Image (tube, rainbow, N blue to C red; front, side, top):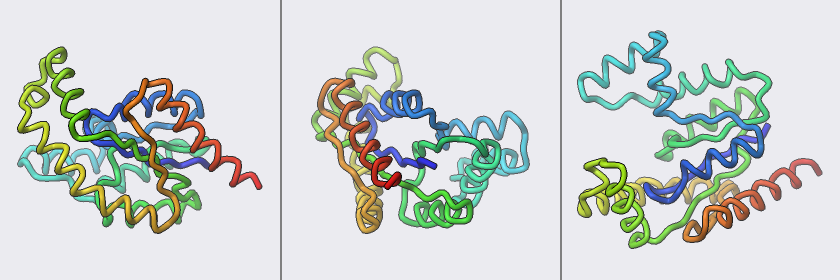
Length: 196
């Protein structure tokens, strides 16, 4: 099973690349945001628990998110693999995910990290804000804070996966197709080493 974590700060093109990878390798997309919305809409036990917390403005605990991921794994037993998007965000979450996937005998095979400079990220997000109308994408201070928060939280995570020899960094400051080609090269290396 090909399980991949896709990393990238806001504006790195992660959403676009996730779609491309899913389409080419026939993987199931695991976006925690989408899962939360789906569980709430389906009024599952986990969904209702998450909604109660969100309505109070509280963060959904890792145990609830991991439970939702497990539901998704169980619902797709014949999947070729999964792309984890938006989770894990902390080392604690990564450890919980490793534990869950270990139980399913389907560990993370690669962590693909899109690297884009802060100036370029700021430019991209402000440009996106001008066309999308999203207020949080139009304020340069907010944008820079989001990028900084991402870097602060995910750097320890990069170190964690680097320690497992799973981290693969890809430069995201190129044309979408070029970035996708580089990501595919990394995935193909993983597939080749697993088939040996």
